[in-house]
Length: 131
Image (cartoon, rainbow, N blue to C red; front, side, top):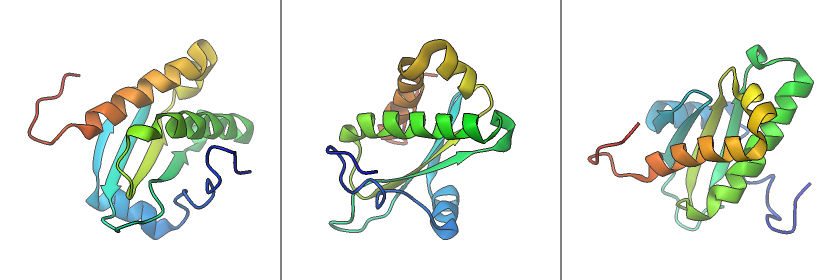
């Protein structure tokens, strides 16, 4: 289901357990009320670009709700991905309440929430963050 904009969308996903574990263990994280963003710089020269993994737990609801949340997060992430460093891995963990955000504010609310995490992640570690 690759789009015109991202013909390699399937390849740009994290799917192996070891990849997720590496991002969790060795990467950095930022979070807010609705989402947690983990990022890890792979350091591979000329890799496949950024890769995205999603974690949406059963607490969010049944499969239909979880899949809706995953589709929305994936779409917003790739819209915002132009500013990301190529060769990094990202894992987005959806917290309970994100489905209500989607219902209440739609893609705009999710874009704002994920956008602030990506912006905070892009700041160097030494700089002070405003939260």
